[in-house]
Image (cartoon, rainbow, N blue to C red; front, side, top):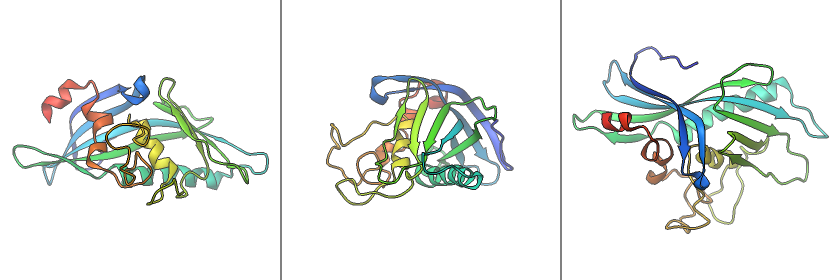
Length: 217
């Protein structure tokens, strides 16, 4: 359940928004948006909020420990906010600023959570290659335990698969397949990891059907 933090005032919220644009499909109930104002600075934050259910799948050789599960979820939440959140996305006419932030409510198997996404995380078997993907129609995500490890994908810099997959969860398409930015290898939705300006809002603001929020911005 979403809760305001001390010093935040809720201005507007929209819940269970559809994700539009990824692979030409739509995922219902992809995320919530909360538009808040900081009581002291008077700046604003656009919070992208997701309820996520994690399911950990052990390999033939190794079981998930409780510590590993907790660590994976904690790292997921921290890294997604560092990479995708904390960005200045708009300056309003009164010169106040709008930043974005990514927040999660997470649960594991055996826990009840009104989920936007179900993330299955497999223990990577020795010698096996990670094959991770998302299904926006069903709200399912498939990850491997090694997806936080940077890998070389044909160009530098290296990329962590998880931060790229989260871009798809936000509704962004891979850029290395076609389009204007097919050779922008630095991009997080190509083969790199830097977050380009064009990737900062297209999945959860510009392409969403939230007209009321657009009017406020």
